[in-house]
Image 1 (spheres, rainbow, N blue to C red):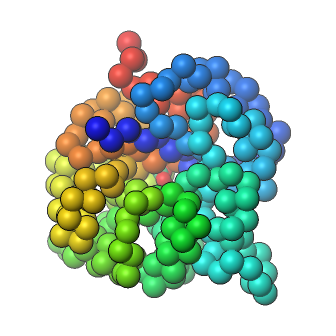
Image 2 (tube, rainbow, N blue to C red; image 1 turned 90 degrees about the vertical axis):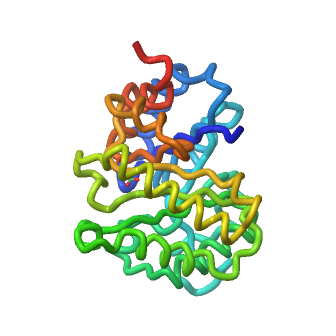
Image 3 (cartoon, rainbow, N blue to C red; image 1 turned 60 degrees about the vertical axis):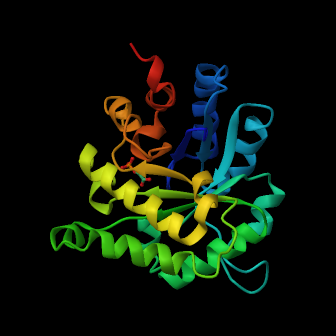
Amino acid sequence: MLENLFIANWKMNKTVKESVEFLEIFIPLVHNIKDREIGIAPTFVCIESVGKILKNTNIKLCAQNAFYETKGAYTGEISPVMLKDLNVEYVIIGHSERRKYFHETDEIINLKLKACMGEKLKVIFCIGETIQERESNKTFDVLKSQIEKGLKDIKTPDTLVLAYEPVWAIGTGIVASEAQIEEAHLFIKEKLKKMYYEKADNIRILYGGSVSPENINSIMKIKNVNGVLVGGASLDPEKFSKIVKYETQG
Ligand code: PGA
């Protein structure tokens, strides 16, 4: 059985003080949860402070991005080695906001995945179609191409997690329907099986896009959904704890 994974992607939100305040409320709310994995991805400037607080808790330290070189003249970038040094466990790679605002191509994402996996960081590789692509029936072509290009030459998927995030569902309050999530996750699973055979059974597939305490129960019931990647609702400790504790909600 794969452990379900719940990742908070804080994006460009929260100062160090605000991150610490969140954790003071959040940690006691989830401290006795042992049957699922929880992770928080703060901004780079908060990673060290958040990491110190998360040490010896059941919450994993995550990062939102990493560059593909180890070190050198790359002003403004952070390398996988540096993240490993701060005990980061998971790194989100290829988020649609990185693709859109920072022009990350499938080729760049592939380099980043290889660099992070080379450092034994676990990666959360994000894929998903835009609304225009969905409306012109290109969803599966896009997912296929993002998977093939992003995972090019990656032979051992041991530290790989996929995240299906339809771009039109991110931050919009519009959640993909259960049928849309189910067919996309099945497509991804089958594609991974073709590439990695039985090793694909260990690759978790998360859903992301307007996840909230209100819809988490139905999302987690969908076949081949092994957790969620949460943006907006993860900024509030009560809301994110309700998502993490989805089964036990009244
Ligand atoms: P959202 O973001 O939950 O605010 O839609 C999800 C994501 O971008 O990972």
